[in-house]
Image (cartoon, rainbow over all chains, first blue to last red):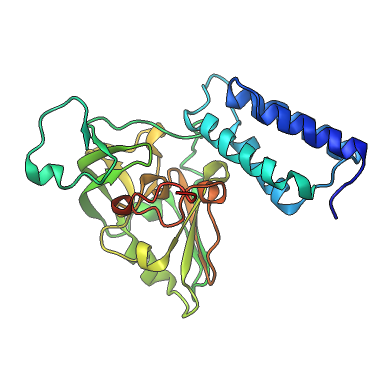
Length: 92
Length: 199
């Protein structure tokens, strides 16, 4: 069941604001992941199987080994996954 | 059709460029995350799911399998196309024959390093132009292009040709791959311009 209440709505609003920001998609993705992690930890939002999958995929897309640049598709993956997270947020 | 740089194409070559694509002689590098570090001493490849005889093989065992050469056109969803790219490797049909698909095997999910996956129906995979390639343009695959092994599926946009592949999982029902989950087209036929699922 989706979370309700002021804290849940604030978390959703924060995440959507981050997703909608201008700027680099990779930075937005890292910030959105952090904000979602806080919301899950505080119990403001609940994980869904799709969000778990999406956050796991996002982490893979942003994984950066020492001495390497992120691949050119990391930004695109971030944009696509963030859009999917946005669509799923109301279920969290 | 946009043609950027390089030699002029004759009419036959132009006819091989799908709609919305441009010709390039280069081979652009596109991936997310980092390029994985590979140790061939511990590398293995797994075949499982809807197969009668699941199996895995090491790099040395892969190198002993029957090999083939392939010259084909490749098309990236980011709109570049290369003509007459050459690959060498093991025909996918060798893998299919060895694993012996069950009657319920209708789809395959390719698994790669770093959690990357790509899915397709068996009828797309099961063709004589589909190979597991370890050589491209006459030389071992470079790390950025999928060393040591890349699935080559020329009939589909090139994200289906999974780099750094480590296994094939055969399935009864379709299971979306990494890009397909988030909006890339599940079919990905370049001749139909099937780039994204919302188009």
